[in-house]
Length: 314
Image (cartoon, rainbow, N blue to C red):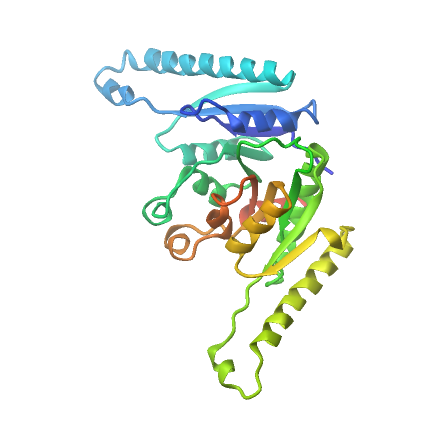
């Protein structure tokens, strides 16, 4: 089982508590070879004024970057002392107007195996008008992403929820990939792995006109089919059936409810990675529930799973 050795942490300049950095340090405790890159994306509009004076451009760029590096080092030392950690933490500053693009660009040039970012709250219109930073990262990252919230991983009873999906055969690979990541987190947090599944019942209207047709029996049959597939998956991967949870309903309703009931501190979920109009009209389940779960959201999109599969073939 692999460990995370190169973690990219997104700094939050407007937040007093650097949750993402704290989470990365927690993970690094279990692997002394871990390197944390603490990334701050900046853009000073004074850069735009330098076009008339190229002589001063480089010195001002260097001064601004050094100021941010010094501030990052102060934060690093503060959190290092709080956690009594000896992890290797490297501050880095990049210039970009778009934080999301800067993070993805950094991911592509660095050999990172995990991205951690603190959760941002966003409203109903965000998915229609613009893509929030964390959603952009979730859609385009090629490594696992943790959207961290302010909770204690080491709290007794904190469990790890893996949201499995058996509606399509192509989702089976995603289920296995998420379970593998959950096993890594389980070693780190000491939490027990739980499997979560929702069983949406889509009943054709025409079926209601069929004589002696029972909607209740149909719903029961759908739920039983989902339960059997979950138990088969759990047995194959040595997970006790008492830690399997399935309920009838839509994922954005069922998942937050079960996570709260089992006191989940980390939730692993796959993302379709949709963008543009498709994301605005259809949405992604992980983005629909990010605000409804009081736990760290650990997301693997299609690009991440595909890249992991290619690595395993090499």
